[in-house]
Length: 187
Image 1 (cartoon, rainbow, N blue to C red):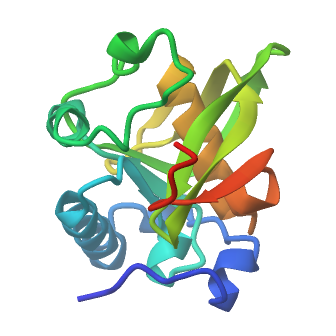
Image 2 (image 1 turned 30 degrees about the horizontal axis):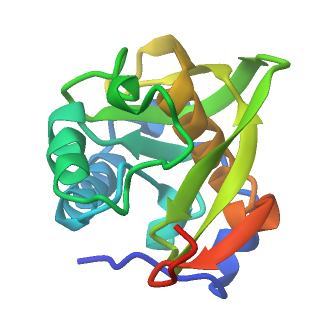
């Protein structure tokens, strides 16, 4: 079983490679997606995972199902965004199923930005405020090899941008306005 790699691993700072369309439904990619789903399900605070985070420099990420995310969120005060007035609504528009994005392209973002609380499974023990576009649209392939386009606002738009950064070798700590230790009283 793979592990989630941490800051300092070279794959996290490399630009991920596209997956040939004819390989999207291959056993190799299906197995990678299954392992990523399994790893994400084990994480108390994770809501999404990009292939580079498991050591694969491929343009693929998954967003975990909202039911699991809601359960984790309700069990954790630390996961709440203290500055998010719309905290109760952060999951609106999200699916109950894991969503897979292969060869994603960010096709549109809003000009309006907002700083939101952000952490990362590859940068454990830290969190920060990262300015991100309030709305984002991603075009990609799903795990069946079908073209998809998904627009999002709020929390999901923020997730899209975070995961797209992973595919381009960027970590949230590169963009954070402030960074704090997870166990600090700064929250």
